Image (cartoon, rainbow, N blue to C red; front, side):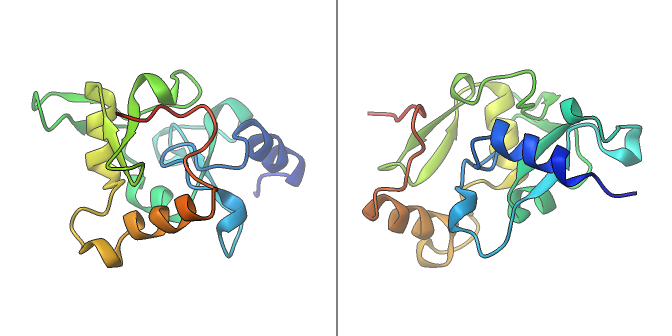
Amino acid sequence: MSIPDSIKQIVRERAKFVCEYCHSPERLSASRFTLDHLIPVSLGGSDDVDNLALACRRCNERRYNFVEAIDPQSQEVVPIFNPRKQYWSEHFVWTNNSTEIKGITAVGRATCDRFDLNDLRYPQEDSIRATRFFWIQTGLHPPDGDLCEV
């Protein structure tokens, strides 16, 4: 059973058309973003609007069905960032001239690591960081309201 278009639109508008994890803008994507189940269906989650987040394909695929991740600083297992219960700016800031997301809490660090939000395993020119740099040059990044590290 698929999620009705009306619910998809509610989720997209609520997210202000950005991925709720990496804050990439949907309007710059070649395809619409996906809906992510905060509690995956495989773990008993529902299609209820409160269990859905807007996610770019990259974040959705890297999240898979994980609900927890390891904080690389403390080595503790913590919940992954939940945009229905938490505020992005309380867990993340933009750094490196707004091309990298930095986790500032255990949840933020674990989410950054689980999702590899900065493509740190790839050279700069082959990563999301290069794309963000382009978005900055066009005035489309970072999203309004996001905090940037000085």
